[in-house]
Amino acid sequence: MLGELWIALGSALGGMGRYALSGFIARRIGETFPWGTLVVNLSGCAVIGLFAAFIAPGGPWPGSLTVRELVLIGLCGGYTTFSSFSLQTLSLAREGEWGRVVGNVVGSVVLCFIAVWLGYRAGALLSGG
Image 1 (spheres, rainbow, N blue to C red):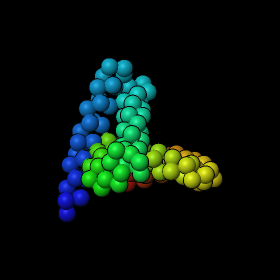
Image 2 (image 1 turned 30 degrees about the vertical axis):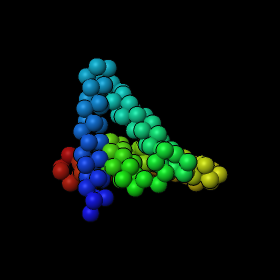
Image 3 (image 1 turned 90 degrees about the horizontal axis):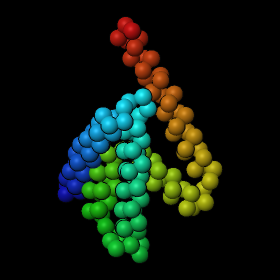
Image 4 (image 1 turned 60 degrees about the vertical axis):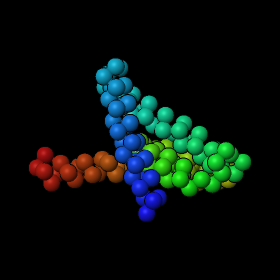
């Protein structure tokens, strides 16, 4: 039960952070390109990489379940799921699974784009638009 609370706390903080930073960037730079989302994704990937190294064998907190639940799953998951995607892709690359790396990157980007397009079309059709 404590693990779920760490994840919930991290998710809430991550979601608020994403909203605040993305909005701040959009107000400063503009919204002709999704700079806020890009900055959130980049910073989330840096944070998840940093803390994954911290809890890795030989890191300062090897195997820390609390850090994994609070930061990797909760905070980074609430902040951006792109960080999770990137860490999983890095794990595949470190294992030499290059075919799976390419499949994950291409599949995630292309298939998710198609899925969001189909979902949008379905929503527009269902709402009469």
